[in-house]
Length: 304
Image 1 (cartoon, one colour):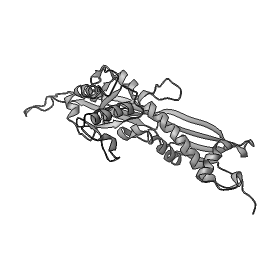
Image 2 (cartoon, rainbow, N blue to C red):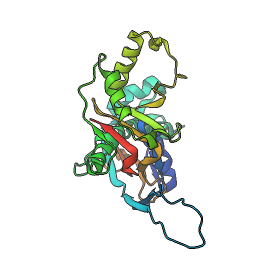
Image 3 (cartoon, rainbow, N blue to C red):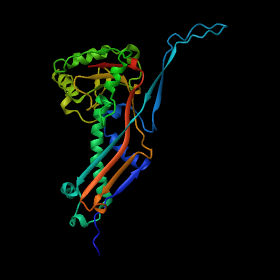
Image 4 (cartoon, helix red, strand yellow):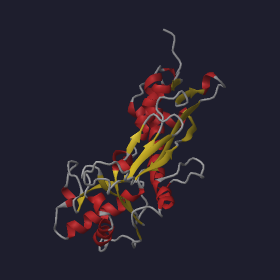
């Protein structure tokens, strides 16, 4: 039987590519605690109604418009992003061999599995970039979309209180987070506990666990994955992309992320260059969109 050469070229676009992009994006931990809009074609208006606290009044025979409701419109426009990555087969083959490859190296047909292996490698890169950009991305920077901290800064005049805190330590983290929670408007705190989170980075969370363990409140170092952390009744969302010494209390329904997973422009390709230029290079191409936007700014309290 004639030997078959290694052919790993794969092309996915639209819905099929969206499945890979979705898997990559959702590795970003913060997206578990944010409202994700998956099929934004270009941009989407986020209309939020606010006010209306004085609409209810005693019944009369006349109609008098009370007004009081204000429509707040914001736009979520995901930014087009891409990954262009080239690697030599020789640089990957050892890791691949350890996982699956049998004898024969290049002369073994292993296209689909090897393509999936390469795509999963790129998925991790996309996820790490997405996680960082969700919070601290700068729209003007190449390869970044504007993150929540930039949006908070833009919203500052209408944001619920912006609290200036000090550098978190095990000695002060409970006091600092307590000051943040104390600044949350009562109307926000009273809303659904399922929707309200305290967002913090890994360092802040580790300091918090250390502090409550030292105080003897809980054996935090032996907790399993079923443990749901809280701070004074508010669920904690541990977000690896959150910069140190920052924390946010917000409703999940006030933090939005958007992408388009079904567009024809959403694309994942793995190109075996040996059939094109005779080299042993592999090119991986991914095209997708991603962005974030805040909803009602008065529902968000930021400590920085």
